[in-house]
Image (cartoon, rainbow, N blue to C red; front, side, top):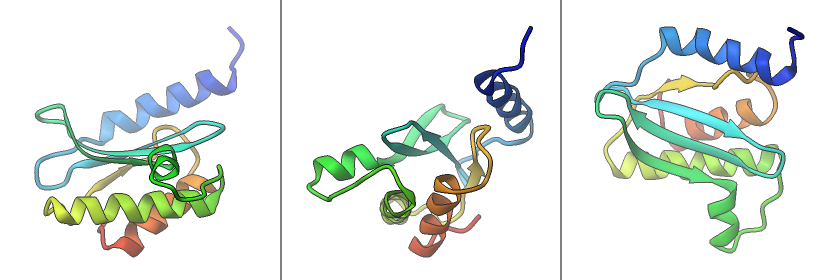
Length: 119
């Protein structure tokens, strides 16, 4: 079977998820990026619940001018951090979801750190 980009990411994702798990004290911050938008969720894996979420799509609906770039990813990270701190979540485990820690994924992580999350 030929290794495609999607298959390679799926394999990396499985490898990462073997080692990472979100708890009530340190939930998992997971990132998903599409061509148009970037999405982030804070998940408690013990209960399987999404505690906080944000995306460039929700920011777009809120009236902010958002494109699929690093700037938008930083805004999503800061928005997610603000929502998480409201729910009294200070520390998270970062799950890059098989993506390389570079570009928009890194920008989202930096935005979340600037917003006050620790990971």
